[in-house]
Image (cartoon, rainbow, N blue to C red; front, side):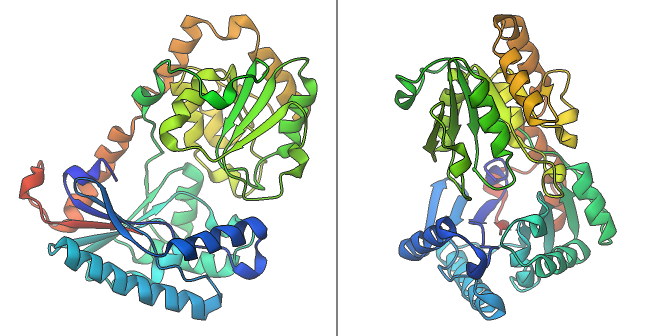
Length: 373
């Protein structure tokens, strides 16, 4: 959305909940409570980019969903008045729970950005999410999928999707920053994972790595969305959430980075951003054989079983795996896959949906609003 904010006034709505409170654990309840306490707010972190927090209404069945969307619709209208966003509107949908808002926001066109099999997450109402996903695929003017498997899903729903894989901020990760203070004192080498700790990860594979190490530490950077007690091990350190701006410093300190996904209906359709970030940092990478990962097996060590995963990490820690040449090869592999390139592929659709005739407009000439849910 930062890339589009130069051409549009972007109103970005932070993600709506998908999990039912009746089916979630204490961690999910804690996040819901923090959102309730924080309330809803509108802020402008950068010129032309405005961020709106969704109303703090828990997802309690159809009644809760209807209340949330009714409140959100009113909140969006108020934000547009406050920001004086009066031009033609394009709505961008990234989560299916927002589907009932399509055509109710006065938009000229709509786009569905499909980046996960939402119905495969734990604790959701799968049939309801499939219905909403199908609705967006059928009814939005443009559908974009971030992986080939997701594109197949959209075709099955009757859409004609564009395949646009995720990108990476290559320059952000290409530097050599000082290691974060919370890594001080940890035994080297450091094997790192950055991302949410959820039940789609192979926790046993992570533990297997720790058990194979004769020295070193497995460092996990990210909040936990599931029971991660299987990771209680003297060689595993969980640091919790860290701001995105700090992630490059962690990656630069890792001797090896890991993508330990389980193979499932959810994960076989993902296009992991973290894989590209690891490569942009030039780090050795070990990953499970997701379809999107196999495209990078020339620069990624792929392991199918937990024992193979642990053995691959041990091999990746050898000095000949982290040379100046190998770092440059990894960085070069993703250099052409920037978020700028992703935005350039999507931008013509947004201009077309907004009715803008000028193919290369100047920001000062625009009054369009791009609303992302």
